[in-house]
Length: 344
Image 1 (tube, rainbow, N blue to C red):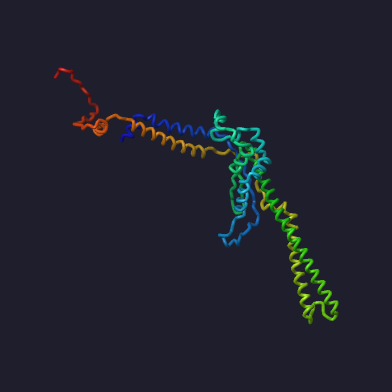
Image 2: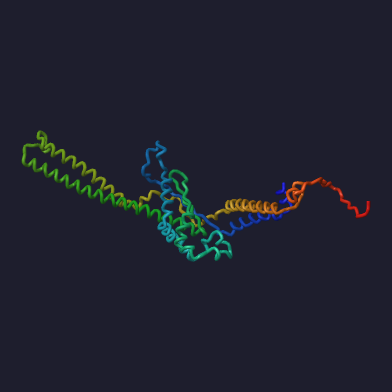
């Protein structure tokens, strides 16, 4: 009850923190730099390593989900972020517009110098830290992946989106070429060894048949010739298998540049749309309201604790330590008449 009395006696003081909290939160959001988005859609057509049959749902991963994880992992690396920032013009933009990337208190006019310091980091540091927050990778289906890039201008957002696709394609192709080159080298060595083994087996069979002209070429009727003939057949089969794998590895290496695993369905457009601030206003307003209510509650509590006014018998006992003999209730609409001293 005392809290309510204090609140109604100091209504302006109690309500002011709530109003200020809402105003500051809304102002904070409104002074932040506007953001624009550019979206690209990719059609993913790749084989996911370790995928079982489609019937084994617990072991199956959608190609778009697999590609999503790859992009997100690369975005977390500094080298990839800087490559995208350099290719997409983000680094140049930040160098030409030092305050364009400011957020929080630094975006409020007059407070930029107070919130910035020498430890803010270089442009490269800003790009490495901010690019993962600028890019959203969203799966729209088993084989459709959307890249949503935000930026301080629609042109920059689209440029960064295109650079992201180029750099990711380059990374995928480079990795594929490296794997294919390793396969070519490996199978090349295996083919050379298999060919040497086949030649030795054929030479042994030829020499044995030359020494035994009556033995048929397939060694029928002669145990030694039969064994040598079978060894040639085994080496021939092994050689052909390895040769086929070697040729396939060479073909994969030659086609690696066109095997990125995805294709661009909708290219990022420069006419990006501005990001709505409604959600941010609602979130900031809720935070400002909560803080304002908390401050108001603390103020009312403080005023109540500091108030030593005696309003009832309990207050008299608490403040003076005296017992109240009687109390006169307030009579609505009544008047108090004073009697001068000496009159009856």
